[in-house]
Length: 324
Image 1 (tube, helix red, strand yellow):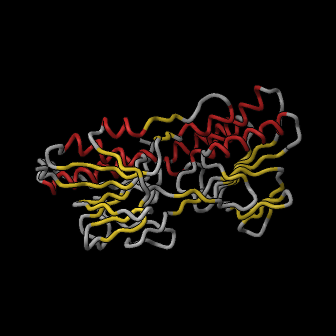
Image 2 (cartoon, rainbow, N blue to C red):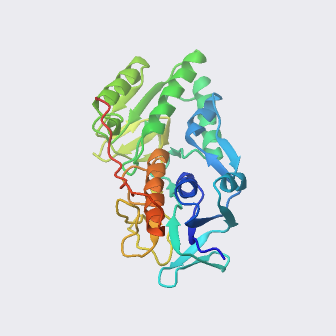
Image 3 (cartoon, rainbow, N blue to C red):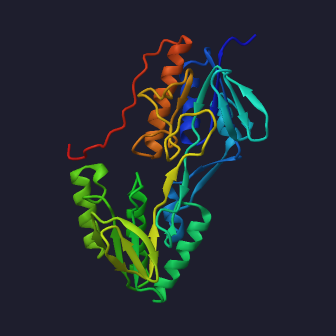
């Protein structure tokens, strides 16, 4: 008879897989892990920004093999509701799964934040559409391209990567177009600290890429990007990052954008033996490295509660200052 605590992890992205890996390392004799996910592949998306330029590609890995390597089991399905009193989840196909501990690692949905703009979330269709814009720039059908960071964005780095890669692409193709970055940030990439912000500003200037800070993009129509200050910016096309929202799950406490409140150990507010890690949480920074840190904190808390010799460490992702 298996007396280990049954840990059910909903979601098999970075946070879900890291939770399984960490529990396997910390408490294999105290916890069994089952991951629930509808997909068959783990998609590593950070390189999505390079695909339109043919200098990199999104990596895909068979999910079943990764989960097996993590010492866990895989159940195909999607979460629909949680019954924390009965410690049971219901899937969209109507089936139910009981748990001792539940970890919510469902991520978040990318949605358009600047109507009329090309929303780049890393999906294959986004890559194809951006490749089409690059072709139009190359043959001079487009003269000005704006890269927009919306107010709802929590991780603006991909937008700057796209702008710089576009500048390099145009230089390699011996053509020119005006490129501008528009961002609500006081300083570009301010989340990384002062030195990094100054470095990216200098790099943009060296590449001839314009920069407008303290500027919130609202919508794009009729070759004008409307701004929150009432002004507009002329553009032939606009590429914007998405806003993120969490999927609504019956039985969970969620804010107006679908995010789940947690403490520093990932415990979901008001629920017992329910944790969350990754983009579904209310963490102000939604990024793979932060998701992995949150998953490690969750795994340590679960392992310690199950009886393993582990001292849980709180996860407090903060803006790092690279001046040091």
